[in-house]
Image (cartoon, rainbow, N blue to C red):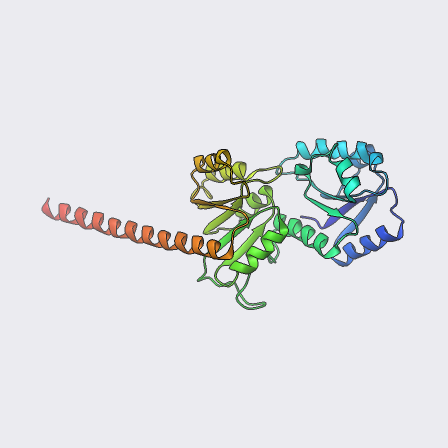
Length: 296
């Protein structure tokens, strides 16, 4: 995906916004400015795929822009994704959520902005959608070294970047770990890559974990990839819905490192046992066929 950002603000020339834009440019992003006018944004040619709306002082002045994005985000497609970032203080954000549901927003940042976290989120989106380049989401055994082909490949899918990074670090020594932060990014990634297991967040905005699971199971190339769901809701109805999908397993967030490692160890050991059982069964079937052929 293009590393281009549409930065929306009424005060594009202010010191703070100029400094923030410079930081984004230093992070490898082209920044295009726009006033918060929906018509101007809608008619913009070559509009960047990522939008950042910077709320300042009077959030009610941005209502029409927020409503415009609520409509766009609600009707986006996999082929034409829209990523929307929102920056403001607590009061401004609460006002904004009245016009644009939080579930449709890619990421929210309170002022003053932690630019490291902002660029991390942007990188997750841009690299998650464009896997033609070398993936920063792959944990390698040695810095700059090749991927270890002897290790199992795990794809982590969650819209929480902090959780992704912590799980990636936790599992990186034992597995080749990939990360994506949305359902659409996951589907795009799996068009060109294979993995041994997917850890999939059940509650994600736009394209939910349930919807991603059904899409994967409907495609020949991905239907046999096992999925372990991650859910933060220890609710009977949610657990029932998860189990009805028949995943390989499910885990409640936050999951402890010990439980996560044990679950993965047991899963792959069981997979090896099942593969060995099928191998022996195939050998036995072949032996019987040979005996029957010899008797004829």
